[in-house]
Length: 482
Image 1 (spheres, rainbow, N blue to C red):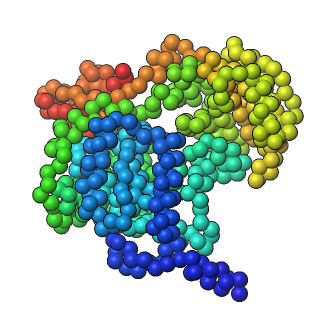
Image 2: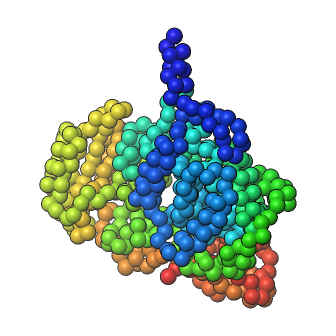
Image 3: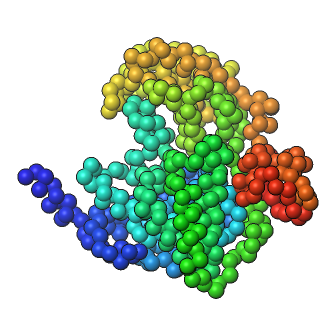
């Protein structure tokens, strides 16, 4: 009886709608109004916590491509928005309500506008087919996941560390971004290629980019690319074959691309930041360097690390402990900062005392806090750094604290002013376009130009054979530290 009642309530809250892509009636639980509101909220958090590339010319270029295809989209009851996500990794994603993003890493990996148009069309396909609403409907039986609450578990793997990681403020909407089904991906490919072709681009571009994405994954990991956090493109090699077969069957519009040819596209992306942004801090191995703030510290070997705009996090290989580096506020007496933190979080302080870290006044406290999974031990140190009051937090279960205490202490002790040599390591790396000489190899070109990419990375980024001599005058993407 309870099951029947729950079903009746669910059906009462749902509605039937015609899918703009398939033309079929579907039962959905997310209304267009809630879809728009959800997307707007998630987009604001993406901008706040992931960041948006603020290059007016490059942004306008992406928006121009997107706007042309949006006019051709089978779904016209949403306002499409296009932006460049400040992600070093090659990726693209769409949020509910028409928010479409390509990463700067994807722009650097693409080799012409046809490829970029295919990717943007693919993401429009997800919006047009209402894939976010479909997934929410399928999840009703086990409870609908909150848009803003799906990220922590994906980053740290659940448990007490997942609870702690919620402080990081990871990217909103990751639950929508990271888990489209294979059928949904194939449908988005189909829609994206049709939109690109109708807009005047070569529909083979999507196949080319998926092949490059597959090569990038193999070069990076030594095996086929696997789905990962914020990775909306599982099995790109297989999908590239399908897209290649479909491309010749699609009618192509007579509108010309905005950047005609590969060289014109490369001019658009020349100077693009590649890799992590030193302005937000970077990792060199396990050493975290932040030249703007003038600090550095070392996380334990083999711990998984992640840098966000809100905090730097590291998780133990055993997933039983976590470390967080955060700025709590302006520089102040670290003892007062500790007292305020303890009052706000209602923790029980077990022990505490003043100390010094990196030559600066500091205060350390061992506290116990209550989480949804039980009691957590928090080993917290506040440091009165010139740039502000920093907080280093080690989190672990009380039973495992003694085993992790020395590790937490070593991380705190490593917090120090950044050295001149480390500042040199943390200089930004930018994409540059260089001209090859006749018969030159990628290895020779790399030595001549100071290319920081390996031969394999350069070959993948340019869609060429690593061992094949280059043509005289051939334009090659490289990465140069500035």
